[in-house]
Amino acid sequence: MKLATISLVLLILLLSACSPQEGAGFIDLEPKQVADLIEGNTDLFILNVHTPYEGKLEGTDAFIEDWQNIAAHQDELPKDKGAPLLVYCRTGRMSTSAVQQLQELGYTNITHLKGGMVAYDAAGFEVIDKSWK
Image (cartoon, rainbow, N blue to C red; front, top):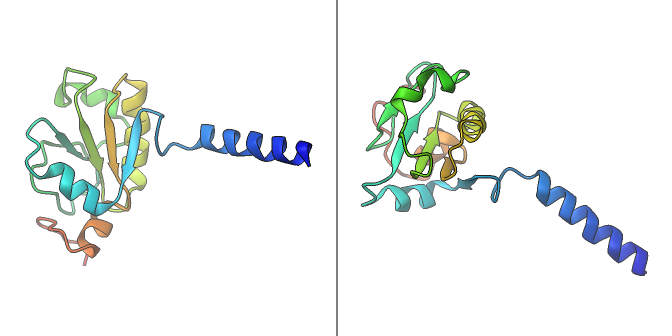
C-alpha cells in the first residue's frame, strides 16, 4: 500500500511538471477570465497571432502574422519581459506555439486564451471583425 501511494504521488508530480498550464511562465485562461482580465487593465499587452487575420479582441495591441517566428518581431513586443501579456489566436493552436516562443525570449508574465477567439465568441464575448463563420 505504501509503495502504491508513493508511486501515485510521483506520477502526479511528474504529470504536473510536464503541464504547461501554470507555473511554466504562463497561465491558460477561460474566456470569462480573459474578459475580466481585459476589463480596465491598461497595463495588459494583448497579442493576436492568428494567420490570416480573422478578427481580434477589443484592445489588441499587436497582430503578428508570423506566429512561427515571434523572435523576428521583438520590436512589436513590450521591452519589459515582465510586462503582462495576453496571447491569442482563433482556436489556441498558433498562440500555444507563440507562448512557448515568448517564454524562450524571456517573457515571464504570459496569459493565454484557452480555445482562442472561437471559445471567446461562443462564451458570449465580443470578437471584432470575426470572419470564420
